[in-house]
Length: 193
Image (cartoon, rainbow, N blue to C red; front, side):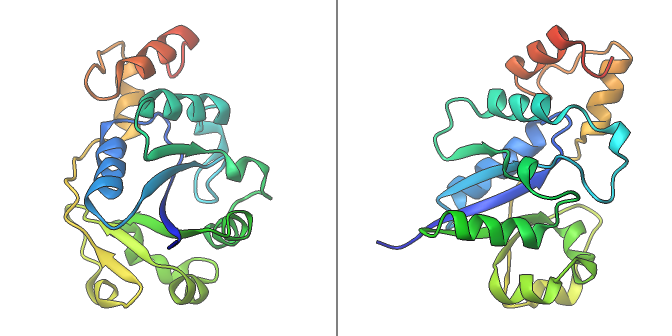
């Protein structure tokens, strides 16, 4: 039996919103991937630690958001890996842990532009495939034609977690921007306010 293909969608998901869900759903159902895992980052090396919501809360919000979707799952794999987590280390770890799965990387075209600066980018591009969703205003140029890269027509919306956090802080409604169970969780725990 062929290895199942798993797309890894890394992010802080602080909080998760429908932009993330649309990308994951498209990748899981409209491409050659069998499933998509949301890899919740405990701490992005490029982000200020203080601005991140509790990682268990962020993981729980992802689980609430994808409840009932059988080809989407949340992964806390990076919670137990050395900090800060680098994508190549996580990929290597997962490939060893799940030898029957083939892991691919999902990323936005904006990240693709800076990929060559990543830790072990050459190994990443040699050993793994990368599936890219478009981002308005970004063009990865030559990188688009790299043999490891697959461009997609994923529908994209300009919605950010920062927008949601600010709206919540200002007491504005975020209905429809993230699933209702996530909103209830945020309300109950008093997150971002």
